[in-house]
Image 1 (cartoon, one colour):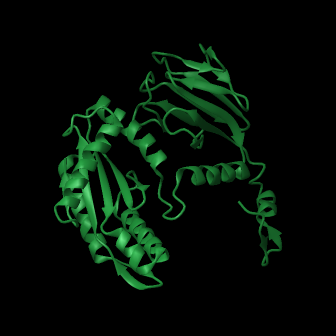
Image 2 (cartoon, helix red, strand yellow; image 1 turned 135 degrees about the vertical axis):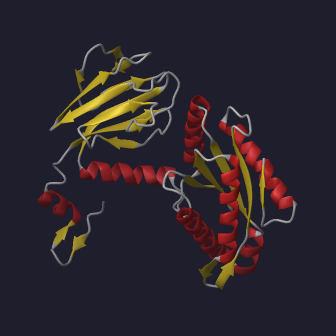
Image 3 (cartoon, one colour; image 1 turned 45 degrees about the horizontal axis):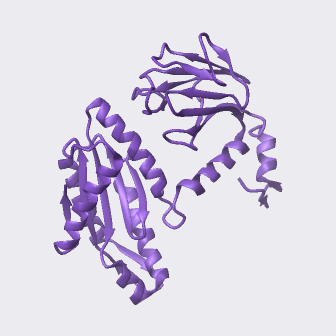
Length: 300
């Protein structure tokens, strides 16, 4: 949120928020301090927020020691309570295990499972905007606006744990733009940046909302496909390969085309237990794709 002057209304953004009451309208929020999805903010928007491993939980966490239906936040105007949902390992408020619903105060620390700590607080629109901007700068790549490697690995860890526990499928795509160094050397780094930004847009438009697209590093990207087996993931990768081949990036050097090599790995087709193992399997498949002529898809 910026303090910009609106020439039409003669007010700043902050003044407009104050006029409409958005600044004073505070609602219950949880910030994840440690554990999966650390740094993210969750709002209690329906008067309640369920925490647990269940796919139906508004705040789904798959860390060790968290029950399917672990705890619930109930919220009313300027008031909120937390209650344990008979979880196996209990819910702790400021270090004490709760046995009945407890009223929450700004700054309270809630622990669920072995390593997940949440911070409770009431936040207004300015607080939320500041947090979202801060989180975006920490978890997103500046050029492509995609998630960065840190966020990808955190999500991959969470999604793989969920897939292993619930015996569902999970796939990972690693994508590498072919001969990207040549594009930079021939047309300059600004043209290379245009190719990267266009590539990110192509990927973002082609996947589902629940899929995670990230810049893995340099000209390498990754996509997490939740509940997708290895065969449909391979088909998805082939569709992406064709889309990239058919798309041009507009740059100062004119329209530029690029191709992509893709490696595909998945659980349970690859019997992995750790996110690094799934990345390694996809990376080996990507290496084969590059070694066999590029602009192709290979799977683990």
